[in-house]
Length: 504
Ligand code: XMP
Image (tube, rainbow, N blue to C red; front, side):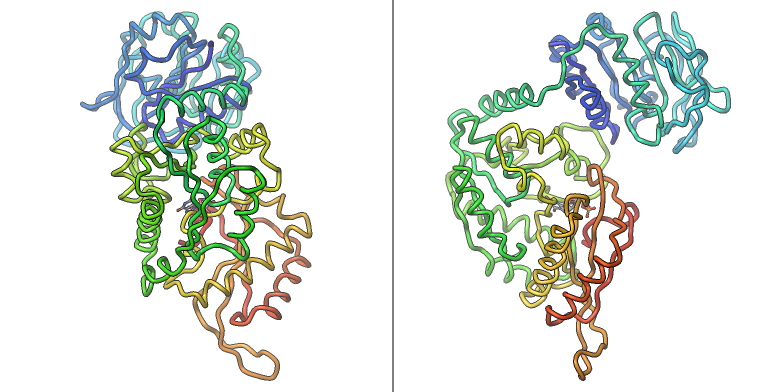
């Protein structure tokens, strides 16, 4: 299959290259450079950026002869370009400072890679190496505002770009990628059915006859995962753990949904265990670890002899997590499902994460392809540690009940007004500070709730939603009238970065 092979040299943005290529309608897959011999029959190859300098001792390398042997167009991005320049006999200079941020791009000619690209185009750079001398059969095809070469071409089919075309700050980046792909022969189209078949084949090969425990939360990712495993004919046991950290009526709704889809589900009520384990703990990372570890314990309590664990980890979880063995990306935040116990299991090869190469919208597409109903696919994401990350400080049943009531009102009103579909994620959380107010004729001394509604593409960045004032007014009035324990309603107007979507 003439797919696009993307070689991962460790940049945080490598998966975005895959995503952009798929958005252009072609089938792209990610590989490690040392697995160059295993990329099958590619139609084009892209070398990603990476955090290293080509002069570092442990800088990742590539088998250049093998790369050339494929006889297909090659694009080197950032580190990838510098590496190609060296391979063609050129030199790379290590600079003392890293150039980071927006820059201007000036194509030498508006043809080939720069066909239809503006004479001056904004691009986004993040690099410390620059081209010092050019390799064999090399020409400069674009420069930056200082006249420095930032794009090279070797012969007919090897290209290099210093900037990152995959990030949205590179305004014409997608078109530049498209121009590159246009230089290739016919490329395989990206069809979710084909991808599904690949995933099913991989799952079958990895799992064999083993039993897989699949944690389901009712969210899009774990639901799609469970249905995918079921469709792959795997001996899967779907387990839903009620951590006592779920939203109002959530457990009953999830159980009913799974029953309707015919996927076997076992509901484990562990709410007391979780609340006891969390008792008195106010530190966000410790809370996450307690919940994550206990979650796995509850699994193995429920199914002691299960040999594998399946998780609905997606790409944004992967890049925001600690060391991922399949990627060289630097650690950003210890987060999400990567608690110690799972890391151990991962080392033993007991964790299955078939959706880890996918973005949320692709998971939804996969789910729709498998016949999962739309209201499940349209559900907002919900964090693994549940309401605990929306309850800063210590978690108590009283606080959780307040959050549940506020959240239920907010989400119902969003659905009623059509804003649920227009927002990427929304929720009500607790601000555990009591302030003075007046309720009826009496002085009140109660908590505040924070309403959060954001739009986002993939959770890596997010912006708050400008909800209509009458809607906010209605939600606020309902919460203040209907929820005991709350006398203030605040709307969170923080973007990510620097804030995050959840409060913890
Ligand atoms: P933050 O708060 O980091 O959240 O901006 C980004 C997205 O990830 C969700 N989230 C989690 N999802 N396990 C998950 O499966 C977690 O531990 C977790 N923490 C945050 C969050 O709801 C948002 O969609």
